[in-house]
Image 1 (tube, one colour):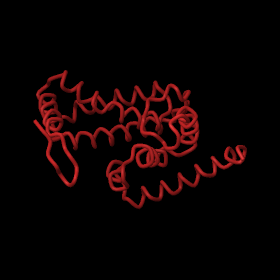
Image 2 (cartoon, helix red, strand yellow):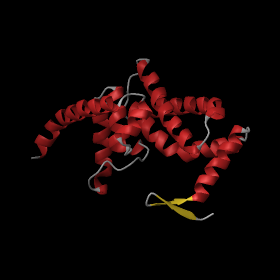
Image 3 (cartoon, helix red, strand yellow):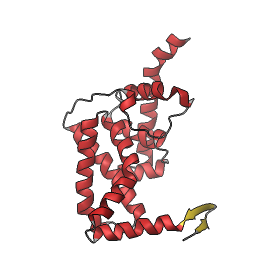
Image 4 (cartoon, one colour):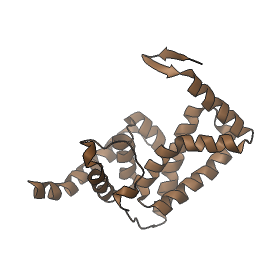
Length: 195
């Protein structure tokens, strides 16, 4: 298909066409196309669900629920960008629903965590960073945790995060400020021990 430049970025038209064809096929009832779509978004959805829920069985339950909701919503989803945003938003809301059912969080070992975006720092510190991040995220409320995961770990901007969470940008900023202050407070004792 080739590539074209848009806004200073090179866009692979073949990838966009493939996603559109998959979505069209899935809307016609092609199970293979539907599965391929979900697989294409799996890493990001797993990262969001893991960081919000902190347990594999809960993450799997949430993602299974998201898949069922996606199958029902396919007729309304017109393009891959709308689908991607819908999947992230539905994953977030489904995870919150699970958390609101008073499910206790059980943060698993860092080596069990699906790989997400790098949190920063030296990649050699990855396992220690993931363990620390998992423990710190568990101290936040679900809304604060979602803001931190989406902005700081998944790299979404405030506008995209606000749209995804269904809240104003100011609310995202407020949740992030509160969460970051709490994370600094939780992190302070461990930093003091290192010095």
